[in-house]
Image (cartoon, rainbow, N blue to C red; front, side, top):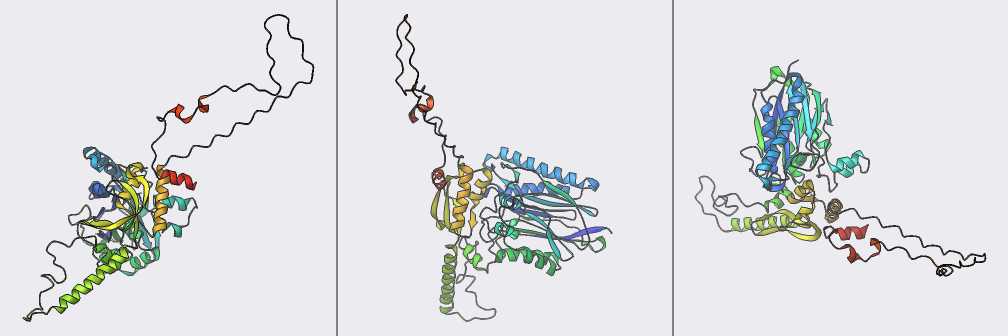
Length: 476
């Protein structure tokens, strides 16, 4: 049976981030999700470049070479990212995840790198098809933590593989899958999978027949779960070609023209807290302003002051509640001078109003970190509480601090030489007499460079290490 795809894509900036760095593409033959990173400097650029490069596969005839063509396109995207960094050095350190499906006949070629995910719902059962390339997943694979512990681990966003100008492996996971009629595929950024559990994903995918409505629901679930990251979703059904809708393509997220559109949910407590970090859109006078003062249609009565007073009281109460909520939030970020610290509040400001304050200095600077960690800290690593933030700092210090040199083993004390019991021989009659050593005496050892004081070696060999390393050594 000939198959086709019925698909929809959605992307939302979320409730904490100030910009959308995710991008996605959907078309009759190609589905792509890319989650960019690199702070405001380049995450959106990276994901946009990846989607633009892969979208060239649409409309081409691939046949049995679909997987090879998909791999080549991802490699071209990587090369294009490196080229862009050479053109604009300010973009150094940018990168992106890529999860892509290319349909060819009744086969789906899959390429994956990073922590975006692909799932398939088949016969009511949801299976995760891709494997996260993260530090936390590595710990799970080694049996050092459980999958349940990984869901709340403070380092769950640290990537080991990513595409771009990043000091990490760029090895792809690739496979070929059957395009079976009735299957429903989900491609998503970690803004969904990190906010919504597996069982809830299965329930949503199985319970909403329309792909567009299902994608909308998944985004809303992520926002209601906290929306701490950009959320991008692609839902695609494998259908009989006779029932397939007309071909169309769509681009969402950073690669789309409307990428700056605000979040679609402003009703949850998290959304109210995040609203503190976003200025009102131009022309929006808010409650009590020009828009709020308009009377009912056909009415000519003037309103008294009480509605405005009540609206103002409600607004103030909402702001105070949101502010209290924000002060229970923690993240690891960097200040304007590039110093890493633990912050309380939200990782964004409103003009001169700061929505966060430093709780603890980490004794680190952004320049001390690896490129992947530097990008994550620049964006702000959100955590559940202060203890989790301290664990993140300890991990960063462990990456940045040099390994301690082993303590040299103490030299054994020389054993005194026992006095001889036999009678001494007569001294020779010729030449100058030699003095016999005193009983029990040993020869003085030859001095070495190591025996000199610390100043003898000079200061030139000492490495500059982050100030926080001293505290880390103390704990060890």
